[in-house]
Length: 290
Image (tube, rainbow, N blue to C red; front, side, top):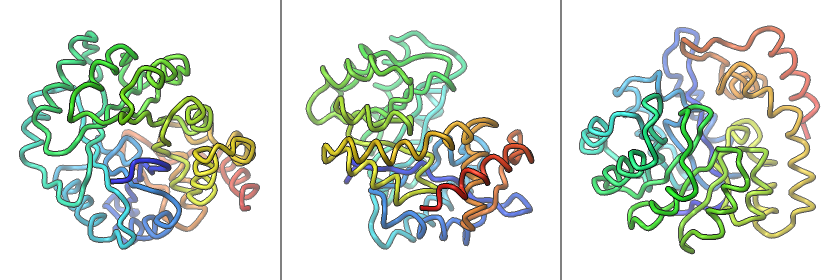
């Protein structure tokens, strides 16, 4: 299991009728496989809240079978109903997958103790090790450094995808965590500074579209070449904000369509990029064709 370096939060390609486009998914895997260390399936970027249980099983199996370079596979499974997740852990076929990325409970806004107990239950019952996922912008609650460090002591919790944007919080985790607990950036633009303070890499959105340059950036940072890594990072400054202007994965799917990988189709309530956003992304992508 290699969770150091660049992981991609894979998009789920759809065709014009809104069905999962497996040929486009194959192209996406081929587009990225030689440049990154692992793939994350059914994350937010994969529109996991808009795919059915049947589709999730089919997508997970397809990716497992189309992994000739044997990338490590991480399965996204999280939510705000602890009991439901415990039931899902018993039903899902995790064959070929090495870990579970589980988002902190959203909407109910539990206390830190509630979040802690939720993750302990999941970890106690999971057949795979758990990676915590802190993304306050979506969950409306923050998984604090203190709670993260408590959870890091659990033998079946191996890391955290940290997307709080709070570098001080990330530094506290890096400074006090067990040596084998992974701090993973959940913010593409903060990847290099997070590696500088102890992160093991990133789970990226941008790497769907630009896997080679993004993977090179991360590898340079992990090799302590922060000058070289920063030069690559600055190429992503202008386009990164466009990825989220109309919500993720609208922006990155538009970039992928321009690159001929998959269509820009998303599932409602998300909508495809507006003409204004499409124009901006097109201009940036054309300038980024290294």
